[in-house]
Image 1 (cartoon, helix red, strand yellow):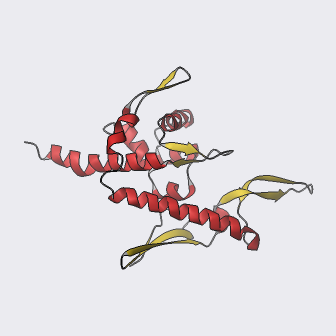
Image 2 (image 1 turned 180 degrees about the horizontal axis):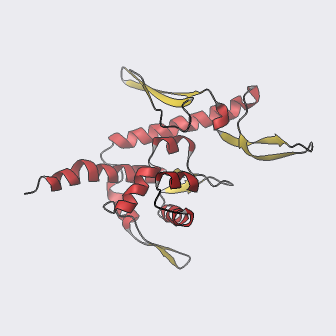
Image 3 (image 1 turned 60 degrees about the horizontal axis):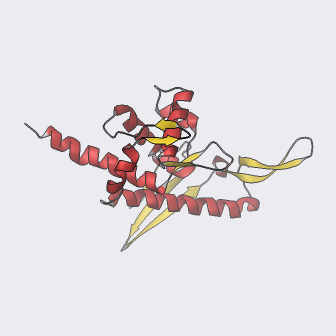
Length: 203
C-alpha cells in the first residue's frame, strides 16, 4: 500500500510511505525542484554574482543540495509521524507551553488547548505541508483568515518564546521544533480523542 500526501502547494512534489514487513520506507518525489530554496551563487544581469537564498535549479549542480534537503525532509516527517503514535509525547511538558514567558520584560502568555484561537494556530502549524517546506507569516495568514500580519507576527513570537518553533537563519521561514511537534500533537490528540468524547458522554 502506498499513501501519497497531496496537501503540498504543488502536486508535483510529495511524500509516500510504503509499509514493509517489520519496516516502513519513506520516499520523496521532487519533479519540480524549483519549489525548494537554498543558498547558492546567483548571477545578476549586470554580470556580478552573489550568494543568496534562491530557487533550486535543475541539473547536476543541485544534486548535493537536493540530497541533503530531501534527507532532512524525510527525517522531519519520520519525527512527525512517530509523534502521532507515541502516547507519552509531550504530556509532562504541557505545563511549559501553558505558562506565561517573560522575555525582555515583555510577557508572552501560554497556550490553551481549549481556546479556539490557540487551537486554530496549532492545527495550522501542524499541517503536513509545513513539515516539508516550513512556513512564513503569509502562509499562516492563509490558514488563519481572522488575523492580520501584525497579529500573526505576535503569534509567531509567542510560539518561539515557548520553544514550539524555530526560525531558519537569514530567512523569514519557521519550522516546528522537536519539542513543539511532540507537545502539539499530544495536546490535540488528548483534546479530540479523549477529553471531548469523555465530556460528551457525561449525563
